[in-house]
Image (cartoon, rainbow, N blue to C red; front, side, top):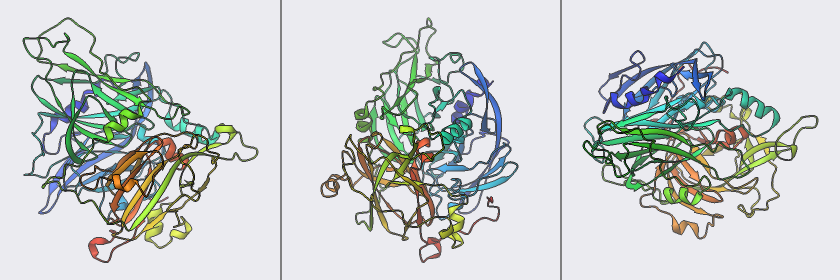
Length: 587
């Protein structure tokens, strides 16, 4: 039973204000050189028993912890993580949002940049932090393992630098996730064997706990103790496989100061929206409970809550609300009363999600400038779709119309190879693994957001896009109504990008660019493409390597909603990929 483990997330937040925490004393250490500080962690992949919703089950963990240990570092550090696979299946770890300049070898996605770490084996990841500062996270990038194998990455300012706002009194990771009664690996296997949708979770969670709206969950719900007048930094991470969330704390407003390890112009909201893969750094001012008087609502306990945002009525989803409790520890004793529940938008309120996203702006200060490319060298329009693949004669398929459910970008459903694309490319053997002809545009142009689209079928293939070093790339992600419109969290490895535009309906190349924000657009690694709409991103392809791009809804990725960007080497030494480490896992 894991009830005793829950306060660890809180302790991690308290353990360090501006340096390496003793997150796991036997597993974390640091050393320094004249240029960079090196941090060292040991991750042991092993099974552990946890109880949720009145049932005990075995899950895969790092160091027996769920969620896993927090990595603490400063901007510019190098973090070495020794991963020992003591489990019974292959695994890889991805450092979500870390650009890994010139070092795709440690990025982590299975069969894209590496072969998996096999049971009984070890691999050391070298995580190079460059411009990232704020909240990121790490997670397994093999099968559905990230359901329980994930944790926070906290990147403080460089020594001698400061936050662009008043230093908070405490920092706390808040990880949103999901819990299944059954083993997620078995569920994945069943879905893939029949071509059907993935079974929804049985509960949503905050720091690994569903909260006291669920059976057998009240005593173990995550609790955040606060004191009146203090300011708390919440590092909010959406680690869910399938769910976008609205998040709020009753009786308190939240000031957003960062997203995806980049600072934003501060803005204050009653609730925020966060898609899978995204992080939000927010400030909470504890201004309700105080010694000697009650709050106006007569309580000192308030729910923090996460409610799903579901945009496709055809898809199955878990509509439960996860809760945790914020409680004032310096308030006078009072009669026990239920915590106050915050207002959250309706599950299908896409307008609320867009209203939040539209407020995101880069800080664009002298200390944290922006560099938005104005000239574009390479333009792509990528349609996003959930599709069907015809059922093979003799098979029993349980997808739409007795076919197999699939997903695609520009109607190419990505087929994962059996060996790593990065290794093949580095050794000039890409042709035997992938085709370098991923299309810049959909093969057929149509009314993408029409509700009556006959274009259901796609085909599997391993097609990648090759980019010249230094080219400025604009990608417009366009949602489609094939098997239903819905929002999609699109994540690019190896880069953060500027989200220069977004809108509803079909992208119009003659009109939409006039609406772009080229002054202070948000700088993100995961963009939520709106339901029946589009989002435009720009980045400069100055990080050579092989970089995965995919939807962060896990079932969409498994179904093929992904591709790979291969960025060629530049001419200078610092514009070329590093050589592979000698201990790369083998397939």
